[in-house]
Image (cartoon, rainbow, N blue to C red; front, side):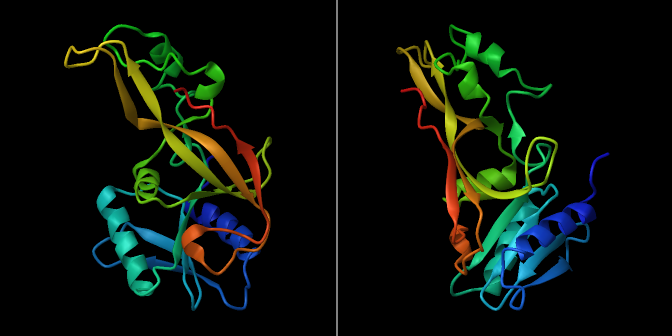
Length: 222
């Protein structure tokens, strides 16, 4: 049975608060004027905010949320977004969904964009980023996730680093030789940090006092 937003919030907040000085931080829920359906949960302290992103947002809603977070800390913009890693709203696998068949794309040739230089193992790390994730990536912000406990995975706080998949067209759309084009839809994660320690006060670049690199690939085709 799928978890509701309230249950996700309780999970996330309990785990994240355990990595903070709880005397200085507290959990809040706010419904913004003009956005009655957009309730947002966040952890607040004197120094900044941690916003818990556990449901989907439209572009307008998410931009509004960013502006509200900036207003809380106009001088430092000291806030962080942590996404709930459920594989449905966020961190959606591009390789194992009904809508996408990257193996088929990889095999195609001719004028169609191809991913033939990627191995199947590469494509297992292909992710379809949602709009809020892309917004963070394009702003140069680390994308951090709360990993709920599953049959395979331990409860965790993780940061992933992404690069776009590169389409290699045999013939360009202008007709002048091959063409290389970064995908605007598919991304490949190439490094993952596990945040084992206590979250440090500078929230803009989410870190803890014990960060461990769990995977570091750097094998994007040239």
